[in-house]
Length: 98
Image (cartoon, rainbow, N blue to C red):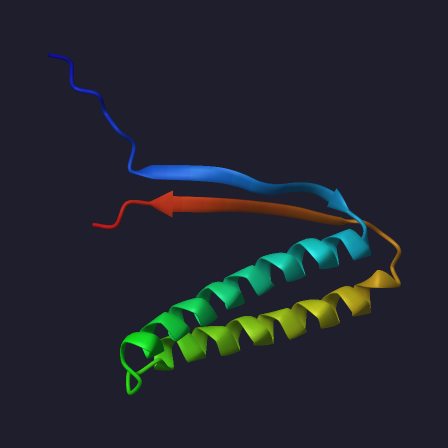
């Protein structure tokens, strides 16, 4: 019997290319918003199961992402005047936990 070797790592080329300021803003803000919503949903599910549960980790991650969103908006606004495109290379790497 043949044994099939399964890789424990998977990479997905999520974003690749040159984008205008507006396109870059839309792409990045959408990704950050999606991740924030994911954590908010997790927090709500925990709360529904236990109204006195601790959500500090999720709250902290949401705050981090909101800060990154603000910093990214500021970066895009400050660099928009240069008039160049933005190169975005977003690789999602998935690994099996050990």
